[in-house]
Length: 251
Image 1 (cartoon, rainbow, N blue to C red):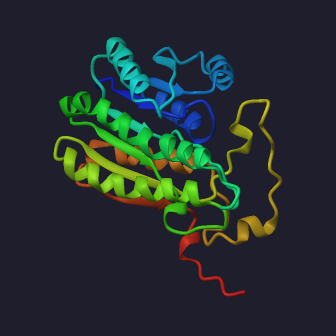
Image 2 (cartoon, helix red, strand yellow; image 1 turned 120 degrees about the vertical axis):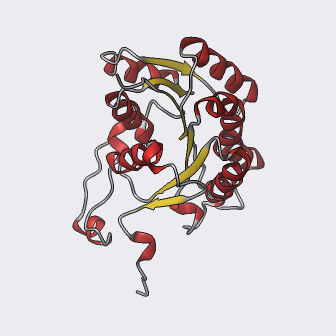
């Protein structure tokens, strides 16, 4: 009989996180799904009520106290933890002269510090199971657009934090990151914010693989990295962007 595994997924109620809940549940994982948006949690928990081994927690990952309590609640439900996916993130993209210090700090607190807090408080349980941490980085850690200082810096931090954690937590815990490119998830948001993006031909053709990405593309990489068969992989960042970061553009 295949052993049942447990995963924590942060930022689980919308976007990529929402699809990760679905795909990992289908893989047989028990899922502790965390999010800080009660409206989104209410909506998606109703949609995913068919999954028996799924619990939802409202968690602000920028609060170490909240993270510690949520890890404790997860382990009370399922004593063994095998996978942590640090997916929660926010963005405040504004010109530097109007980006407030508070906005900058909030993005860093959620995206970077939150990744550290979740890893820190889950580490003991993950050591016990010889588990895995997967951090959601971004191609913005490698390239930028104007007015993205807070988000880009936070994801650059996640990039570096990933290989630092891999060395600190190895060999018991493997730590890797995924850097998505354009992954279209506008329809996977809570209903008050959901939209259906209408693709143009140039949206697809600018990608060397010929299409814009979908959340399933990221879920496939998560499943690959979580598999013990791939246990020789740690400290790495995997760019899943349809080849865009390799495309030279001169005009």
